[in-house]
Amino acid sequence: MTASFVFEWSGSLLGLLGSALIASNSKFARYGFVAFLFSNFFWIAYGINQGAMGLILMQIGFVATSIMGIVNWFKKTDSAAAKDI
Image (cartoon, rainbow, N blue to C red):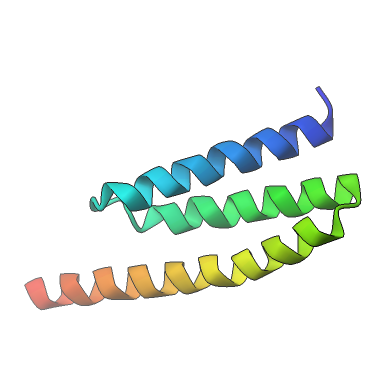
């Protein structure tokens, strides 16, 4: 099993997990962006391994949107929890 194989499949599976979590619109949906963030890192590693500069650039942009999603979802959930107190 090569590093490239691990990077590619980890990125793919974590991306699918993130998408499923967000689509579930459940209390676990916010963790979809965390899965996306790890997926982005695996895709960046894969891009470096393969010399795919376009993929690396795209994933750097997705890192930013994943972080935005994490901040927004966790802030929203924490605000809702504070209202319940």
